[in-house]
Image (cartoon, rainbow, N blue to C red; front, side, top):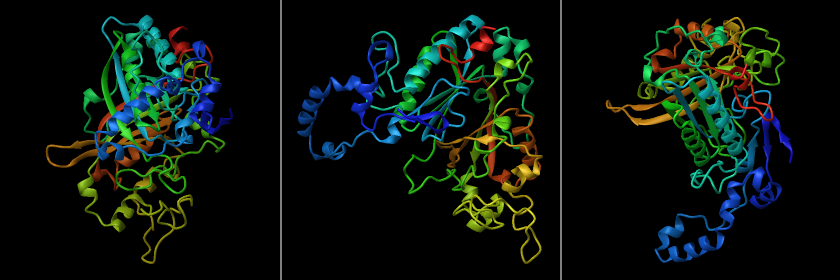
Length: 437
């Protein structure tokens, strides 16, 4: 079984080849193996169901294909960093914050993270959740791992509740207020944060449900947000994702191949301070950003491009070239004005205009229906990663807050900042270096 880039690997090309490579018992039961024994009964059910009419038959595929690479791709749970940070964007996502229940402290939090880590490890490997009869919901029994990732983080309030205030990093100081904030406190912050991503909606929901059940009497859900991206394979070639404004989103992200990527995104391992437990970890800023789509869609494409500073068709900068061409912020047009306007979103947020400040944006889009005023409740579940939010998100957002042309078309409705520790080693659970130190 070959290892893949970004902590991913491909399982066998068919369901059968994966089953044979994973033993039962201590090694775990594959979700796909459980449905194998039901094959005869399932076939009989299909025959009986056929009498119900052609509409039932038309709703299924006549020929089932082998498990594709989308379903068989597996993200590694163990590693230097947690999965879900540099992992390629998945098609479905859930962001969930939990609060510890009154009376729950460090001991209960450690037990919870131990349970959560065990469940995440099994589900990311394409196995069923372990437990007694009926413990696994069966939602994803016939699916492969589908690039499932589960990422855990701690909010500022977690440290007081667990008696670990002296271990709270300074980087978790509260975010400043911004003029575009219309924050709902009930959908912001939280003691614990979980990010779930997968290329299959049922696999993602299965993980969500399993983790909610494992929270038991130790923690309760504070808020939950559900998101999506383009499904892998939906385009003729790999492409940068688009957001709900139709814009290519993520072009200027720092790339793992860059020499300073680790330094900008992950906490160094040579930290000897009280927050040394964060070595290999990162800080996630989470913002629910409402897009005022009715207003945005009234603009011409040309005007939209002026607001962003990039062409809508291919994401290329207005200064010329292709999507990957660096922006020429000094280039002017025949009228002497900058081709990329002075208040364009891409210009203001560029590292060149922010002292090199950078963050790894890894968002999901969301659509929560229609509001009472008839406008779509839709936008971006913005998630960005950096070694220090005071050197990444905050300086860039302060700059945007002072004159970004995009600001009239968005509204920040929820916010959170979470310390996401490094990955767990074999036999460890996420956060163990903090909770057992």
